[in-house]
Length: 272
Length: 266
Image (cartoon, rainbow over the protein chains, first blue to last red):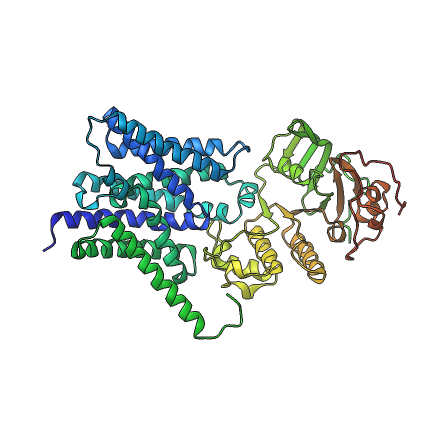
């Protein structure tokens, strides 16, 4: 039978994939992939501070992510620097300060590789509780905000004119993203988190005719990628986090190829 | 064409009934630069008002003030209690990675029963677009679909931003007929915002010509004859209606446009 740690790894991966899929769709539609990266980078600062202050790592990442979200949305209100500049500024200073802080804490043995690439096979029951409990809360919040977020994604001006709290929505989405990054850290690590958001969503696109369908398919494909990646890593003895991302990439290639083939067979008059 | 009760004098006190939004003595500055100066504005239920003015005239600023999205430096704004606004922007930025049918779009941000959605689509003349993908619609189709969504919300006030910009001349005439029909059926107020004077004037009950201040206001015919209007839009602005004539914005945006009719007197 399956070993316990494999079961835990699968459960952790599924939990993350279920929230990362739908949220990743919004990230793709709003073209904010860079934000996911930035949040992940700043998470290293959270880890460093958490170690210094002796906080639970996940909690420390959550706090760092929230601080990042507040800072970012606040800074976006000024019009001097564009958002991508702000993101680069915050993300890389977060990463750099995190590394500097870690170097001060020499006495602590830090598994930096584990944070950068994830260590899903080392997931404990407590981590699972975080992932599934937190994931359920995040998913519930996302469902609640879904339609207003969609409208604000399509036309922010329209949403604002019709009385939607656009700024609060943007902040809410950033917070959801920050928390998802915190949950996903164990599974794929800081460097690969964005791929868990983006790749299943992109792979789901050709299979969906509505936003909700795309979100569900992305969640499903994310779970498939987790299973494939962990399975592949088990048999081929490859690093697990990167294997999950490779599996997701393969799924993306398959759906793209299928979509291309489907378009070619019945000749359509319309371009694209 | 013009509805009864609309006088060419424009906003004078306003009727007691059916006022959707009223602004008085509005002044707004951005970074020390005056964008709006002493602007009065009134919109009643059942009225189609065209707000026209060149780029940079403060039109969208005034709309934001009216909708309560921007607090004016000076002046008073009143809105009917619980005013429901439907906003029809120039275009949507639906990313091709976002699969969204017209039917789904009509349920944003609130879910609507299918029967209501189909009826709204039929009302704007595009029932066949129900299952179409939003990012594949033409400009004119998109305008109608957005209009359907706006009326579906039960809006008291429809704000259309540059409604004529994405349709050709023939399509514009149809669009404005449609807008007038929507007004008649739903009895809402409609505010058309445009920098393009040619078309928005035709079907309006009242035209407000803005260039940081209200240059002139009244029925389309009256405004067309106003020297201030000719000054603002150039002498070719005499020709009203659905013609496309080319004017160069030769007036100085920084200058006061009022009263100095150096062009033709119409």
